[in-house]
Length: 289
Image 1 (tube, rainbow, N blue to C red):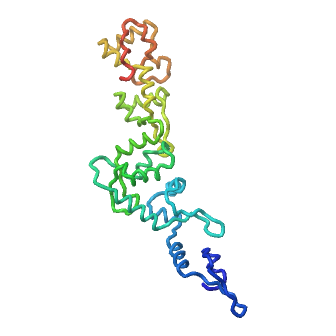
Image 2 (image 1 turned 60 degrees about the horizontal axis):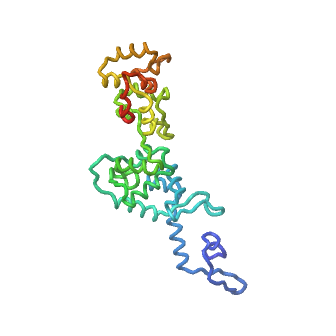
Image 3 (image 1 turned 45 degrees about the vertical axis):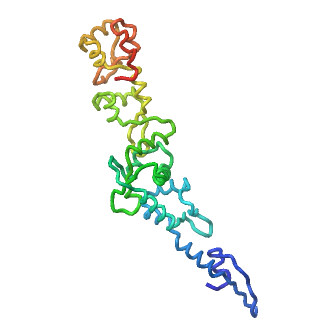
């Protein structure tokens, strides 16, 4: 520990003064500085250890690094460390703060791991951003299990969805295909057909691989198309009679020339608007099924 340059080169401790005794040079170090630096060295943990302590994945820890969530993180340095280093005390303190704001939630919750899958690719680096929201008590959390890390934290699903809509930047709501089926009041088989043939646009979540439909895509479909069942119910004429009547006028369902037919008959509204029988039918129909 006292050989010349050993401590200085290893942990970069400033030397206070040197002395020359009988041609033997000794480097004298300030004891409090040594103790402080040794404590800092003992406090450092590796990338792999940080993953285990936090209870997150490698990808999620990279998100934490990119967003600068921890202030004492040390990047790889030549002749120092080939990997990222973290402060064990800072991580422990951060977990304490997350657990401190937890409370009983009388509504549906999801674990953070599940929340990450729900968010998917809609928000860049979502984990550190979500943790900041939790610390600031902008999103309610509770403790769901005996883990002492992020794995134990469950968040309000309602507040999570609200945050996703806000943080995604454009305020669009996203719906799964089963949710879309309920909105259109049709069965899921037909809903999958509408999405598969491109009548309703979707995006694919890169992580969960689920197809998600924007609210504006649903509105666009409603504005352009109408189900035969809707027409039949509104004007109180049977579907068969309407199909025959429209075919006589050379107006056919949108799948008329398709090899594989849709499960329900759907018409393009533009082809019906000039028919006397349907005048006024679509006046207030843009936002309804």
